[in-house]
Image (cartoon, rainbow, N blue to C red; front, side):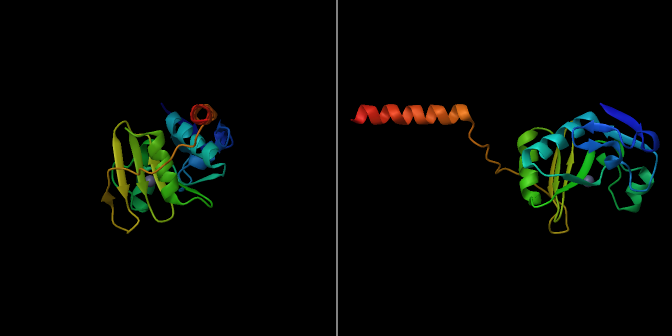
Length: 167
Ligand SMILES: [Zn+2]
């Protein structure tokens, strides 16, 4: 759900453990800030996974600011559903891969040279703009989920029982 906040009175309000309203504010200083709850959840998941601050280069944009920065008309940034993010010491491709893993069938993921655009649109969109030209891609596969304890225990158990049979 998209919510409307005031930068002036709610700028310091925490939307999640590591995100404040002001981080999503339009860079033109507008008071109105639109933020989708699902976007906050997605960004907090990225924050927790990589264990590093997620810097929002651009969150909500007013139509005037979107036009000024060359955003596409109808940009998800106008709806409060998008963020251009960079995580220090994490390659944008790795961020895109994890976002792909988190929302394989929906949302938007756009890969750029120094940042990743993520949005929580109901549909699905994927593009690679690292060359400076936007190229539609099928997705960003490659994220490998780490082993969890249960899987490791099962693997060791199977291996031990195989060794026992071999003796
Ligand atoms: Zn964007």
